[in-house]
Image 1 (cartoon, rainbow, N blue to C red):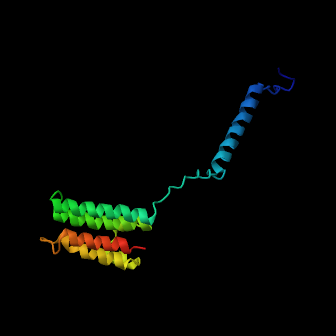
Image 2 (image 1 turned 60 degrees about the vertical axis):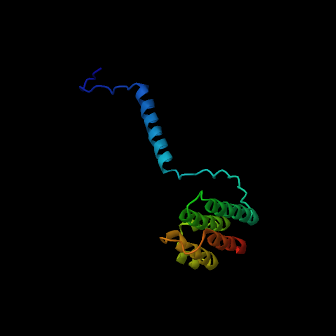
Image 3 (image 1 turned 45 degrees about the vertical axis):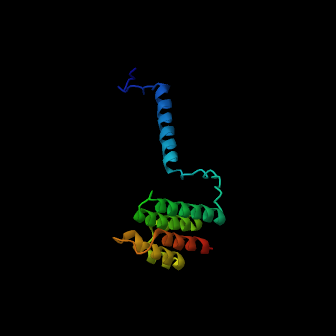
Length: 154
């Protein structure tokens, strides 16, 4: 409709556009709220505590494994070098289970720095037999050294 001065009356928009505009504003505000809201992490579920074996149980298991290794080597089922390496590993595994430290990957110097000089000395008595072309001592002597370390552990 045109009035006398040549102007048209304002057009009426459909209400659909108003509601779509408001919905768009609401979505943008919700997106910003979701992005900027501080991340709230759930409290971690309480993990059941695993009962660690007692020192006596660890000691008993290790001594049994040392005896089995020595008897396998004496019977010829296990080569001497492998027996010496297994004895060293058993002692390290025992100490690692008792302390919770990664003993199996520590050097002798690292063991000494952690205050485990007796363990380092015991393993040092087994080492020459692991790496020498000919063992310097028998498997039973290395087994005795391993037993001594395990029995003296406190």
